[in-house]
Image 1: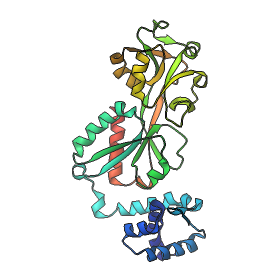
Image 2: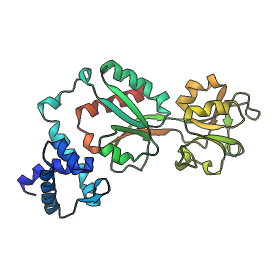
Image 3: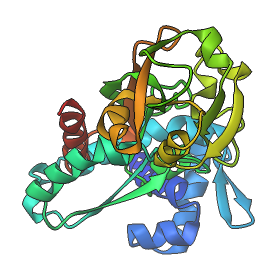
Image 4: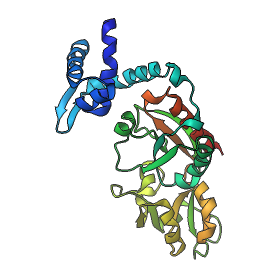
Length: 299
């Protein structure tokens, strides 16, 4: 690549993120014909078609997506060396941050995160979105979503991640359950009961179903709930049992007449990560947001 070709990189990044030549041109403040000319030069440089026309704009080729993270990261790094970007003052931040996460974090992580953000950045706002039914890689790469908060997973190999918290798992049942006077149960007892699980429309096994926990595939599911807090009254008014994060269970089970049962077949803890696109790594505002999540997970 010649030195004169380096100026094409921001155009490439804008097209990948906007999926549209005219939107990329508007974002860069140049004409659409200039974007088209840049694409022609980019194809010569990389010896690949890079973009193909679709029904709603253009789609990057597999090769374009392979080189996108490194190029996007370089554009972000250069932008953040400019004087106006070096110093981030949260007190002046008026951004809306978007976080995709499971509903459970509204009860275990987000209260502390809200406290921190509203104290330091009173003009900022937060929007949370459901984790399921979303193409998270696309939303993060296009900066429509800032962070994904999810249990440790191998589903996001192209994203950066950092551990923000750990949480145990417990089985819960109603306090007057006829078969559990103590606080322990084994796998055989667990599989003999009916279960309430947390799931989404596209899931059959529930959120924990793909984590390799012993016995989950064999359990008898009596009720699938779309929200984790919806599980509590259902278990409290029946002999069904369910698995909940330990932090949530300790905070709310007593209010619903539930008790926690320790189960040796459950993992000692679940690791929770925050995921983000590599292009955001050096962005001062994004670094600040990640720091608040990290500190909130330790509270």
